[in-house]
Length: 48
Length: 215
Image (cartoon, rainbow over all chains, first blue to last red; front, side, top):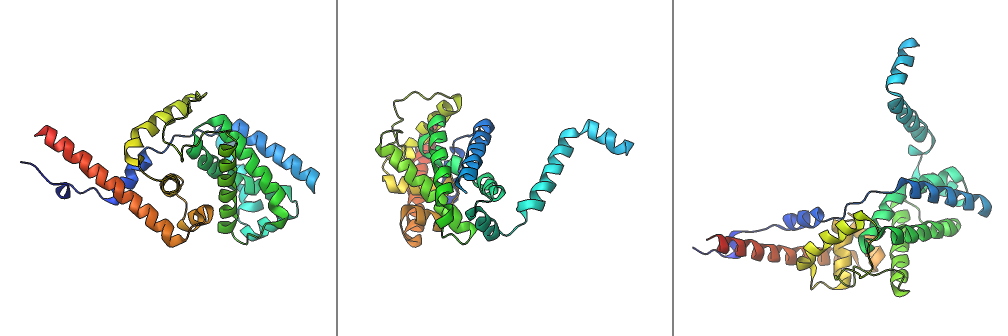
């Protein structure tokens, strides 16, 4: 017995969840973050 | 005192984090955002540091979701924060929401400029993975994941794909997305809803095919 797509509804919520599962995994490099922070604050000191 | 010393010896990292949390909340964490922004406009380094700390990871993720390349993401993120520093004295934002809208818009235009200058390959404008070799294992994994959803997003326009990613991956409010893409909020909501409906239809078709094969 064949079935129509309507009998297997996939909700928009499920579609959103599916896209979320493919969200890239990101590990933030804290060394870069801290270096950029220090550079930014050093520039702020020069600017003001 | 001895008990505290013993606790500190065993849990020095917990105590260290706890002390930092107290310092953080007592200095800027509990302060009114506008007050912090005004201090930053006048060059208060603690306030600028606070703005940076609260937004770095969000902006990093936002940029990375468009290019999947760690070194180039770092270049763009640097540009965005130095632009923020230059713009602070004349920034008209009066709330946290407006500040973030400005920052995301700046990140998006910096990314678009980098694509135009061919500094980076755009994933919003073409789904084929850029030919440059990713230099980090994380980038390779992420590009592999992107290949797997190509089938769902293949005939979306560049604009629709970008808006859908901002909503689902970056979890941005519709108002911010509308600001970034220079669209109306109503239109942005419609694009997200239409995009999800399209994906839903494809998933239904996919599930039906599996069902028929199993029969």
